[in-house]
Amino acid sequence: MFLFQPALILRPVFPRSIAYSFKYKRCISTSPDLISLLNLCCNLKHICQTHGFMVARGLHQDNILLSRFIDACSALGCSDYGYSVFTHKTQPDTYLYNTMIKALCQTDSPKGAIALFNKIQVAGLRPDTYSIPFVLKAVVRLSTIEVGREVHCQSIGTGLDLDVHVITGLIQMYSSCGCVCDARKLFDGVHSSDVVLWNAMVAGYAKVGDVANARDLFERMPERNVISWTAMLAGYAQMNQPNEAITIFQRMQLEGVEPDEITMLAALSACAHLGALELGEWIRNYIEKHGFSKVVPLRNALIDMYAKSGNIKKALDVFENMKHKSVVTWTTMIAGLALHGLGREALEMFSRMDGAKIKPNEVTFIAILSACSHVGLVEMARWYFNGMGTRYGIEPKIEHYGCMIDLLGRAGYLREAQQLVREMPCEANAAIWGSLLAASRIHGDAELGQHALQHLKHLEPQNSGNYMLLSNIYAAVGMWNEARMVRKVMRDTGVKKMPGGSFIEVNNRVHEFIAGDTSHSHFERIYEVLCKINGQL
Image (tube, rainbow, N blue to C red; front, side, top):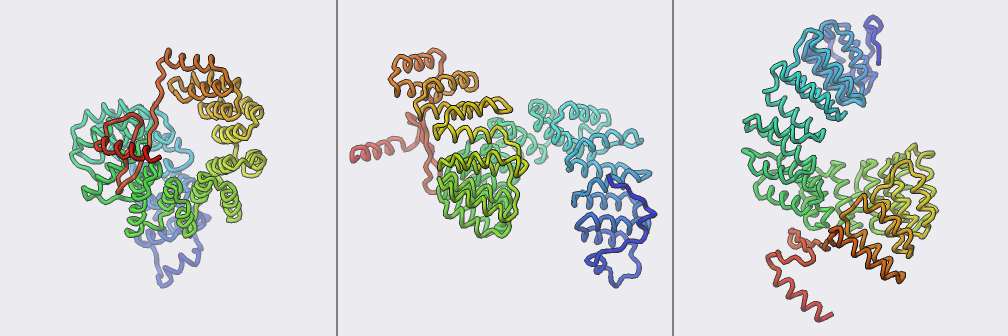
């Protein structure tokens, strides 16, 4: 915490950039002057000098002006200084408490926001309809459902539980903490057509992956806005149902709803999953036309969409034309190159990233190890994996171990891969055992395949692909009885073989085909063409 001594800063010295704005003013003591001054602050030094300006004129005694000061501290990441000033205020009101709670919610230690909320009533004040939604944001960040329930009880005790803003905050809190049933009880108890309230419940369902209930509510909404559509679109994208996400996006266009940046991010994510290049191109043109081209997250999403849709050249074009590249930009490009089997180019891109003084993150190293795996650079992968902690201060997580085990398995270092599994600081997941099973298939190691399947039977009991892999391993080495036994186990335990599927985009519409499915409206015509193709082949 920064401790402040008013007597030491009665004569502030303003930096040139701030002082220039007041060059022709002899007396600066009105609140508009302070607001202008706060708008010019860009670091802690400016904040300290502005505080001195306030103290010298007694402006720090005004709770509203002090709230604006604390807001400015929060915006610049100086919440500790703002809190120190707050603690020296002799009679803070509820408005000032709310401002400080909101600021503390955005720090790395949101527990302080909860502690401060509990002091409101101790100070003889009463929380209002802003206090509760603000403190609930801290509850969401900490995922402390017990504290959330306590805040809910306090809202009932203070008679604020019927306010639509408070109810919305509680619905968001319960949904974020995984208690969507409690959120729905609250929602059903309020007969309101408020679009924000409905959006909170739709987003709550989407967040926990219950897109069926989210869609049901969405269709029954008295009024919808861009946030409603985005919540539904993002829910489908999150649940790996990109076709439905695209359908929602296209319907949104037909109803004349203008998408915002977040909508387009979700739509681009769905395009990337489907490889819907034509629709992705349309979104790119929309971005350019509506002035969103400088928004870095959207450009990152475009890189990802082009890479996953098979056009790495356009992904590189977007990347090279970006003036401001974040760590996500570099990581997305490295991952895209790796996806296209351009492992060496991906490593060269990482060298450029290093040269640009951009510090890599955990995801960057997943992309790097994936790049090494695609081109079999085992020694290089070992060097990067072992250097994550020593050179970059990043401790390998299960995803990094998974990449390394997959690479070693593909390259035939099966014993080293198994040793790494034993040395992991955490339990191996289905992806890791699946990598070992796949490696045993490549190199004909039936014993390792059997060992991997024993673990996968517990982790993914209904995944037919695991059983089929082991059966194929046995068949490849002539162990026919064992191969038949695996298939018998599948039948006896009710594990069904999942049919394969594919997507194709025609005229901005994505069609899904599943093996054996006859539900498509043009089924007969499609099979007629397929038979002709087979005949020609």
